[in-house]
Length: 410
Image 1: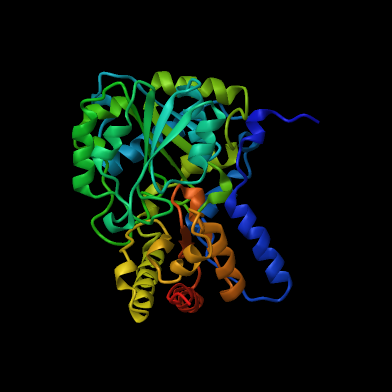
Image 2: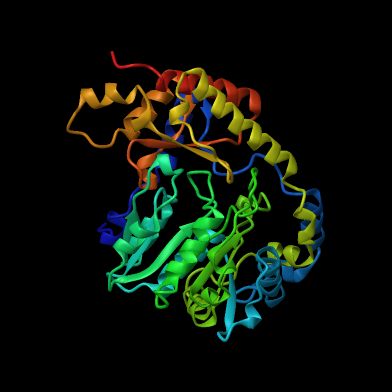
């Protein structure tokens, strides 16, 4: 069977590859510290579970929903974002719309489909989530990554973004809080970005805010459009319930943008998945979002403690200069090129540029600590580490991991 060139050119998920290896090693009896997870290891709030259970009694919970989602829920998401960001979409002279999709990943896929023609460029800030470039490529677009470094806390310079803008640039995508870096861009950075955007009113900015509620060190995330509300006219806000509700498997995402764009996304959705899950939408309509206010408090305590464990683990191995402070999300991003062990790999093959996969495989084989290679996130010689496991095994994993990375060249 002849497959399409589109599929042949798509890259396999590094997370799936690593998890296949984890399963093999686990079956052989090896103890694995799985630090690859992109989800929280607990159920959503008790109140939300009760609302879902109640909706099981109604016929419409099992029937088709409108293509773009139930209007009551779309309005509720709009009000939720307005309240959280202290903005008001009705103040704009552009009609704003909203669409609900099957998770924020599906939302982003539809955004790219509605925006991109073949050859259009999308600027990505590295490190970026693994699926961004693949979705852009699938729609015929070209990803243009902005390089950053760990010394700057993985925060890009505005001038570096400006250098990549061309007559083919259609959009800029920012993800704050960031997966995989576990940071959010500062208030000052967002203000500078807002000023920069005033010179480019034709550019669309896709703001992926899926981790916006998971911040465990102040100050909390802010967004560029809060400092100039007119920028909302060129902004696509993407969010969902996967992280903020601890509901990765329930697949509800949404976006708020110019109504011309959300209607175009609706066309794509009408010919692919149709409307999203009726049961969960109906449950969200009945659920009081204010009950989430303190839902993450215990989790944030754990993340602060995990961040402290990371810091102390680097310090104990005299690698404090290799450490940076995470603030949000639930990941830490390891830059192997700054670690002593990296010289051993570089000496073994001076012509090779990226050792991410090799180092991650060796760490898993020798220590049992499972990571996701950073090359999938657009950053060479690195890896993403999740901080979602319990504190005691996380501390053990860090001891083994940093001990491996601290090994000096032989």
